[in-house]
Length: 432
Image 1: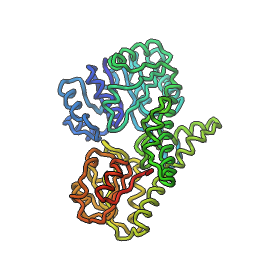
Image 2: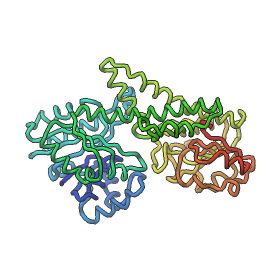
Image 3: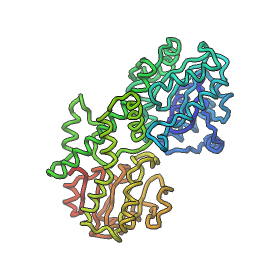
Image 4: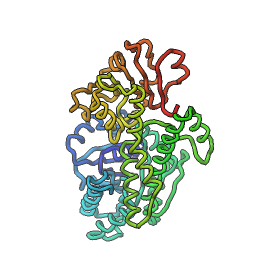
């Protein structure tokens, strides 16, 4: 099939590359000329394991193309995916849909035969209705069908999630469009993915409801971890005991820092905004947002307790600063709050992240990016394992840490507290 992905951000690029790897002809469109030039050279704008190899492979075999010409790309394609950003508005918690609607206006000027127009971007309920209204101002409805097809990709696991999804959600009442999309996704359906055809509005809400629920699971176990620390119980035992219940499941029940990234923070806010428009009180999700906002403050308090209130002039090392492993995404990472707060209290911070220097910390004179793990932890008074990269799972602290009084605060519970105690390492976890 001939596909056009409008937007080469996380969703558009990963989806387009994977579709091309399944044998489809895909054009990825972006107005950023430098990004398109780099993609043609195999230079990827995001960190995602395995993506670079797939881009190079499918670009060379001609199934994957990159362009800045939206009109030409749309005219040559049968299925158009809108994959542009929907960030939170600066002065409210609502999703900013300006990019989506601008693309819809450009699409309507570029179609002369039947096209399926799909919102892959995460959008509030009834966005599809508005897209349909925009396009139908100049085009008859016989020339297009607007469909909602939300993505469920985890950063760091996106290629696997696309290739082996739990479900494919298609929101449309158009039988023709539904059958075409079922054929498009047949390689995934044949591997066990559930194909769900629902209304367009339901598909839009499924995405938001899913992210809100996952955010709730993370926040829930973080609050249970707070209780565990007070009553001398290991939160990992709680997670295992709960997770083995098939009604609950163990995924997203790992205590640690606040949730962050490109989805959960903005999507929980956006669904609240939508509910407020209909005078519906989503009290559980509101509590989740509030609790997650307080999470970094709780962890900072724990840092202060570990250091017995003596933060000034302490050398504090962060291993990992992104919001999670296997990504370079800094959006809503808890380190954006924690590091400036520790600096303000007089600490000297250095960090090591496998994805390198972060521009967010360049402005702080007491923050240094180390070149490797060894130099990062060598002289540290406190080592904070913030992100669960594999690089951090088998560190020989006894050998590498020169400061024998150094303390480890493992925010991801990567290491065994029992083993650390046997090694005479001053070690603290979360919810233990």
